[in-house]
Image 1 (cartoon, rainbow, N blue to C red):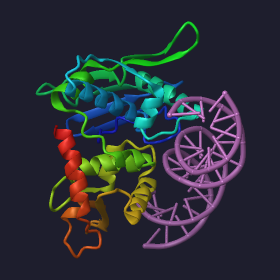
Image 2 (tube, rainbow, N blue to C red; image 1 turned 90 degrees about the horizontal axis):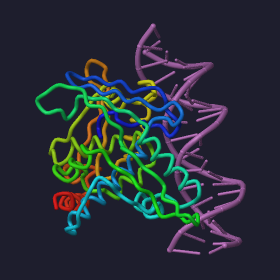
Image 3 (cartoon, rainbow, N blue to C red; image 1 turned 60 degrees about the vertical axis):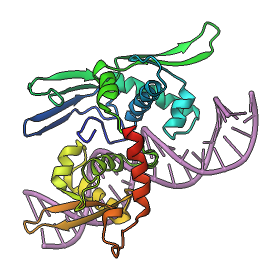
Amino acid sequence: MERPFFSLAKRKRVAPIEYRVGDIWVRVEASPSRGMATIWDADILLWAGSQLVEARAKGLKTSPWLRGVPHQMLKFMGRGTRPDDYDRLFAALGRLQATNVTTNIRQGERQRAHQFSWLSEWERCIGRDGTHHGVDLVVPNWFYSGVLESRLILAVDPVYFQLTGGIERWLYRVVRKHAGWQGAGWQFTLPQLHTKSGSAARLSDFAFDIRQLAKRQALPGYWLEIFRRSDGVDILHFTHRSLLAADHPGFDFSWQFLDRRLMEGAGG
DNA sequence: GAGGTTGTGCAATCGCAATC
DNA sequence: GATTGCGATTGCACAACCTC
């Protein structure tokens, strides 16, 4: 998810994402009518993954076929339950099904292209009397096996659903993956982050947004700092708050307990 | 000319009260 | 508890301007 698989914009995006770093490449193509799946649409995949993990934990039989109640799905994702929210949920399902991803990530030792949609299919279940019985959806086999075999979906962090900005959400995923429990934290140049994000914004706009996030310390549990390298390139450095020096203004030991609980939840 | 900052448009999202 | 209506707010993308 740290790769540019989703649009970070809330507006409809049709322009494809092209990403290539070293041997790894990703191309995401959107349906002209529906637009590209967004990072908010990806919440549905988190819901699907959590349903599969929960069912397995209860010893229930699982399959790529899932049935969801829209109201419960919206609650899970921390959304409202207004008519607009239901419409957005169905629009999101459409975008996930219509967005086409081609990549060579997760191909093991072989280098070959893998093409897929985020959802194989979905449909609203409406009875003869017009009553709604939820939503049926089928997740792709790679997603299904990835969730059950290799824990593709990490613990669903409630903090994540509270992040409203697309760049915020994406950066939080990057920071959680890379900073983790690294004592010295982790860092990327802003051009690197811009490329990784697939953002349609200009580098200068993107850099401005990142600076604002660092200024606001917008990522819960992590301390963000920006400094300029000798060659003039800006660097974003991030560290888990509980790993900062005790006299550091961003030090907060309480985050250690919260994140440990989340990680234990992920690990089972 | 490149990169940074500010302002604007507009779709998406939110807050809250009312209604079913 | 779930759904609806509506005004307010938010935030992404873009353009214009500024600074170096």
